[in-house]
Image 1 (cartoon, helix red, strand yellow):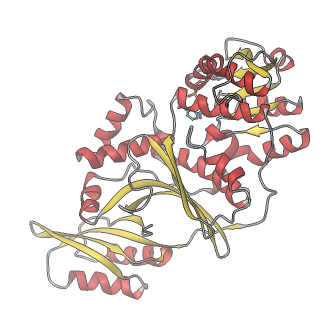
Image 2 (image 1 turned 45 degrees about the horizontal axis):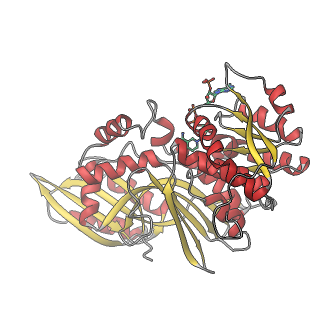
Image 3 (image 1 turned 30 degrees about the horizontal axis):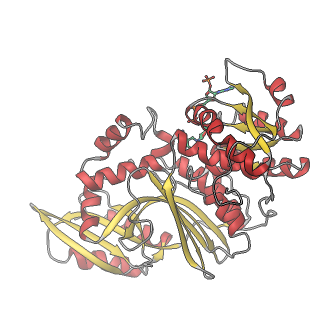
Amino acid sequence: MTAPDGGPREGGEGAPFRIALLGHGTVGAAFEELLPERADVIAGDLGQRPEIAGVLTRSRGDFDDLLGRSDLVVELIGGTDPALDYVLRAMQAGKHVVTANKQLLSQHGEELYAAAAEHGVQLRFEAAVAGVVPVIRVIAETLAAAHIDRVHGIVNGTTNFILSAMARSGSSYEEALAEAKELGYAEADPTEDVTGKDAAAKMAIIARLAFGAPVHLDDVPHEGIEHLTGEDIAYAEELGLSLKLIGSAERQQDGIAVRVFPAFLYRDHPLASVEGAFNAVTIESSAFTEITLSGPGAGGPQTATAVLGDVVSVMAPPPVGPPAPVNLSLVSDIESAFYLHLEVADRPGVLAQVAEILGLQGASIGSVVQKGIGDDARLVMVMHPVLESKFRAAVDLIERLDFVRSPPRVIRVIEEVF
Ligand SMILES: NC(=O)c1ccc[n+]([C@@H]2O[C@H](COP(=O)([O-])OP(=O)(O)OC[C@H]3O[C@@H](n4cnc5c(N)ncnc54)[C@H](OP(=O)(O)O)[C@@H]3O)[C@@H](O)[C@H]2O)c1
């Protein structure tokens, strides 16, 4: 945004571009504060000055009145009810919509994309995935012509904060969660975050844009982090691995697989060094190897910046919608490497028997760490890639062996090194 002399453009007047602001919480209030700070520069560049036409909360404002006085609706209420109704009515009235609402997009995306196309308006949602990190724009616009093979992401800051804290201080899951709550990185009820559901919603949105296939939140299997222990992380350190909650959307021979799961990454993986509440997304294609985007995935001012970026894009098109839907089946049983943690009786032949059962299912051991604990031993191993169903079948058999002292723990390992 520069003037012909290279300096920033300031003080443009321009006609008002009126924004209905639905929701005035963490992000809504930050947006209202940010807008006047940036309005001069935007008006100088675009000849139109964005301004808030009015605010709607449960106790303030009337939706129909506000809609009639606005050019664009910014939806920052969250959830699906009444956000879905408001967003659809706005588009039916010919108004553009900007939203940060992942629940809405991951559960009603097709209806919303269709409504935007039918009514010739833009629907923008950069802030719905990874806050201010421009994942949506890059996939939907910059890489619109690329054949994307896979998207891997750390798309939930709360869980990344917890896992980073466990790795940094050796604290338990419960201690790290308490610290996250104290510092404002986790909500009082963190269920959606720690079960992986929040990340699943974001991966459904990403998969729709990257592969064109409609993916509903309910189509995305998700595993959370509640069952992880400080011990898993300590062993991983010895094996040169770091533990992350990964959202993954990838092409398979017969379709696409979209999932959320905790995974160990080798330290050279671009996502391995992403710490604390940061988000990061790696986009892979044979055309360009990989692109990794990272930055703050939440926070009022940060998210409001992404929302305002979308508003500016609407004011100065070009519009790019999601690709037309295609029929791709969702594949659930795919190959991956695994970490396997076993507590066993410390006697001869145990490792050989475990290896034999794994071998019969086609699973071979890549590396192993063994430690004695009194009369028992811990066997921690990383397997070479194997079809998940075969590996799980082997683990079921191993669990039944008389020398196995507690349920085996299994975590996927992402093997690629860039
Ligand atoms: N917070 C973040 O860091 C962040 C990051 C990325 C994306 N997002 C997304 O941004 C959106 C807003 O999040 P937030 O954290 O700002 O939420 P929030 O702090 O809970 O604010 C929600 C706002 O919506 C209003 N609201 C709730 N129900 C309403 C209803 N039935 N009718 C009208 N207004 C209603 C609330 O007003 P009253 O309670 O006063 O009525 C409040 O002003 C969500 O979709 C969220 O997923 C947030």
